[in-house]
Image (cartoon, rainbow, N blue to C red; front, side, top):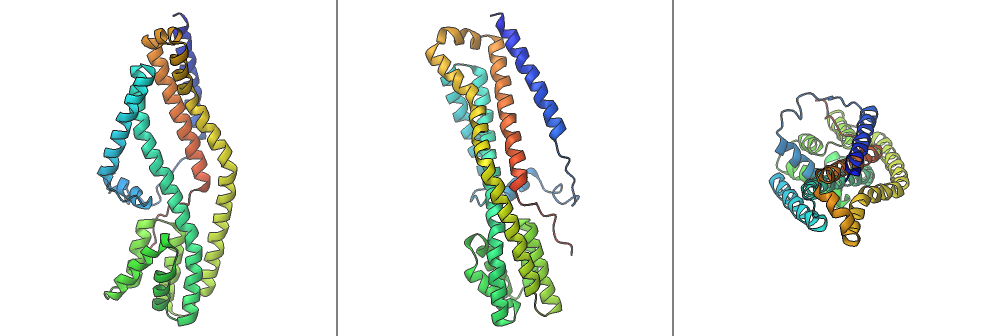
Length: 298
């Protein structure tokens, strides 16, 4: 078993290279709205992500599901490999995998939402041209807008029918969605409400901007498809080989997995594969994810 320490040292060296790469490639982030998110607890921030992903569950239900999924995957990993380290890593992988699913779904829903705003702007322009009033145009949008956007404008119309200022309702929707282009639409509608006159020219420019952003994101996403699948295969390959070797050459692999070096190697492999996939996913998402809004200045 003399190859055990050498294998583990090789993995540790590769992990060091990965850490250096993460440090070099890390992009600094700045909080442009200090105190806004810091005042919210973890569950409140998680619930905000769940709402943006359009998952009809609470934050506690999400955490419970992720925990159960992790336990199930951990048991399966232990049964397939016989390694305790693989079982523990399976628990973490199941939990983080469900979290990654939330992030991916949230990002997709945010892209779909922003792209639907282009058609919403067209309906707003047509409604305003036909009725010459913002209130009537909002009622038309609430009835004919794309499904992913419609409920927000139905909320605005419902608030207006109860005697509330529809601008306040729009601000509440914008605060929840945190979409930069929706903020610009809300600002245009606020301007039309306060100053009067036509805002069709502003809405036309906004529609063109939204479509240009959507077109650029689709091109980037298409070019990323093959690379993403290759990254998934590479990250899963070590565990696939481990399972295959245990079934085809148990005398070779089981003594190594039973040693401390084997357990350590499984942990390091798992960490490196998980970090590599997460890094790939984050870098890819940054190119196509809509920018997070920091709010509308009042």
